[in-house]
Image 1 (cartoon, rainbow, N blue to C red):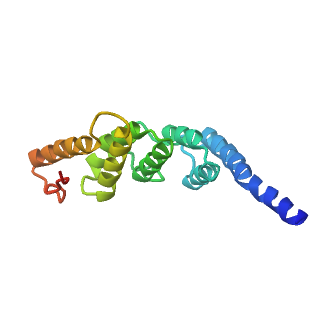
Image 2: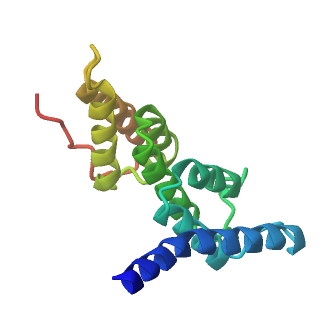
Image 3: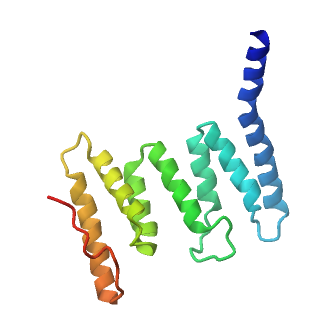
Length: 168
């Protein structure tokens, strides 16, 4: 039993150790690389260690620092969509539903309006945000859907979501 407890304590220290090593590597690389970009592997290791420890605020800060000012930077790795998806998950874990909706509306639903997962997440965030308040969470998603549908019809680009209608 004593051996099991020692092993459990050692295993509990591993995510903290991984975070420490990865954060040092991330800091060193950002100082030494030509463009200031950390290798994707090191950055993902750092995020994973923060995730294992449920350090959502630190993870959100790291993601915000990593996302470049230029939205269409093709050199970015991991890809921007993956970074925003991760940020969305962290915001949801922090129960910042309004921020989730905003991120979905400003980034993901504009770029990927046919992705049903994003629409479902938008609806989930709208309902969670509306919980305990006087406004209708479904109406928030319907409003976003109407705006997106209107923009897509003006640009005359076919979209498979144009027939989407939430049940009333």
